[in-house]
Length: 208
Image (cartoon, rainbow, N blue to C red; front, side, top):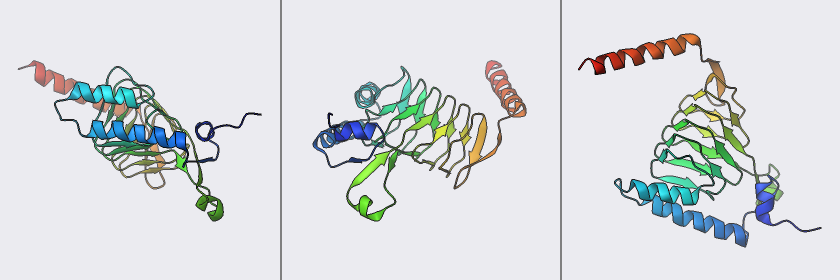
């Protein structure tokens, strides 16, 4: 029976030792790319895009991340079309992070896939694990929100600022709080309200 590498254990969501040569090399390669990205000038948009494509596992054709941005490995992060992350986004991607299309992050949104054993002796030994985070399509996450390991956010969800998400959030929901709970569903009245505002905006703009 072949013994798995620490990286293979990590990506399988099993216990692994982070102080491993292969993982350290991946970690420092990520640090180099994030450093280069975070040091780009505001006019160097093509360079930013290229660096992120080197860093991340998968991207859409249109996306934007505002520096500074931090992650552990980068290669375990997939983002869809029209992804936007504002300042100070952190993604600890010891497990996969999968983000759908048309997702927006306000400042200081953090995604933590990393977990540590509750038993102190095992935790102090250096063993850890990770659990995948998934975010659906058309999701807006408010500032200073934290997503904990293993959570799934459904399609068409709004997460209020300052939330700590510890459990899955179903689609078409508005959720907020610590711990984050569903406040209510997104309704037809919500849709009509914003479509009316959209119509007023374009009526005013087209009248000029």
